[in-house]
Amino acid sequence: MSSASAQQQQQQKRPIRILVSKLGLDGHDRGALVLCRAFRDAGMEVIYSGLFCTPEQVANMAIDEDVDVVALSLLNGAHLTLFPKVAKLLKEKGADDILIVGGGIIPESDRKELEKSGVTGNFGPGTALPTIIDHILKNVKKGRTGQ
Image 1 (cartoon, rainbow, N blue to C red):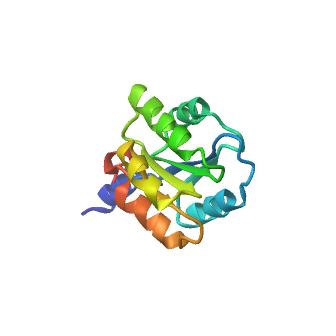
Image 2: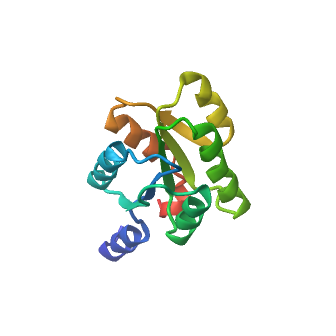
Image 3: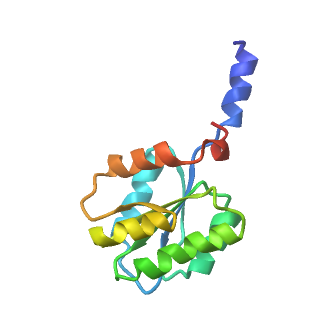
């Protein structure tokens, strides 16, 4: 492959863009901020939504920022309501190719329900950061990043 071809191919690839969001009335963002740094250190472009977002705000932000992944964090128990709502809104807006990853205080019994709605991962406290990053790398839609 010529040098020019290699440069052109490299320019077509872009880092994974990830939106990290705190939904609802959950003001505990230490874990989300740790994730932001880990994603950045893994070479991803990170957008942090801030606290107290609605599902509508998250879906709109994901589309406006052209992200590949939405990482939702929730510690207040409303994950079965708010996470699926984000997935539904993204689907309605034609953005169902965006990977949605959940995390927070999520009982094992709720994880299958979240998976059915399109929310993957559903990682709990203490999950190793490389495990979450690996999940994203394996599941992000390849066409979104030019890879």
